[in-house]
Image (tube, rainbow, N blue to C red; front, side, top):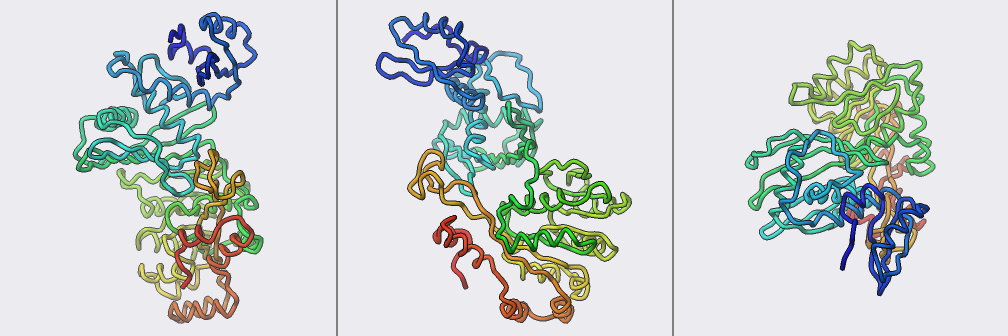
Length: 455
């Protein structure tokens, strides 16, 4: 079949591409469906065919364009191509199959709402998977040779050592589309078959959500808003990686009065850009970890401090010290529930009386997949045939009042603390999740997948 002019360059510059053939009809996607001159020009090229033109938005067009021209013969890439730390993926390069393949991987990930891209080398081929709504979904398989070329391309863009494939490497790069500006964190680890590459996608275009739009239940949203009235003390947000802790803290910081208080955050990485807040990126390779940066920011006269994660005793001690000296401190911990967070600080070496003196609120949260609004749970294209689309937050809150503070200071056991909370009709993660299932937002199977079986 003859397809004059429909080279990658022609398609990219004119915003037109072949979508499909049906019988003697050719369906072409156009970014500007009102371009009559282009329609006439293309129609003349397809003598004997009925040309049917369909409108496409920029994101769909770019994705289709990269996919279509990512499988062209190897070795046709232009020599002397210049690389930089910023990869512009709005356009495909003529005769650049690896560039196009990588573009299609990123664009497909964006279209599937992926948070991470996994490129995993195997014995015979490499599989590419996306993490969407917390679960990995297979995307495509490529040869190990093409995977090596993709790895080399990523290393170039991230200023990593292209020749190094025996040691792990970490880096980052910027990726831009018409609508997105991504900060891509790259982790490369050698395996017995090649390399395992994980790309974390952080959308710089994202702005923090409002508290009301986070998805907390009505009762938990009231607890969340009460935090805004605090002037000092420690607020802990707990949960595993990917449970939305940073999103919750960013929403809280956004609601504070930035005109009258100095807010400093220390993060790894900085996920949300918040105007009016001093945000600092951890740089461990320069000796600027959470503890080192915390020591320095006390000289910056902060009123509110956000610590991306308490990982060690040094950071824990500094966080408690900040809260004791009149600062309002937000921090995250990796614990299974809110009760365990109290004892995690004690296990790190913080005395009971100091924990009791500073801790004001503990939040534990998870994200549960929501039943697809289009298909229920039967599976469809919008939900990637999983039956779920999007996620909702479930949480448990422990406001630390005088009685609870005295119990913590007195060194009560975790079992005693749990019994006290049960007598106060404390709403657990399971309780919140069951309410979502009863409302049809999620399912019992999804609750078991995320939380296990209620003990």
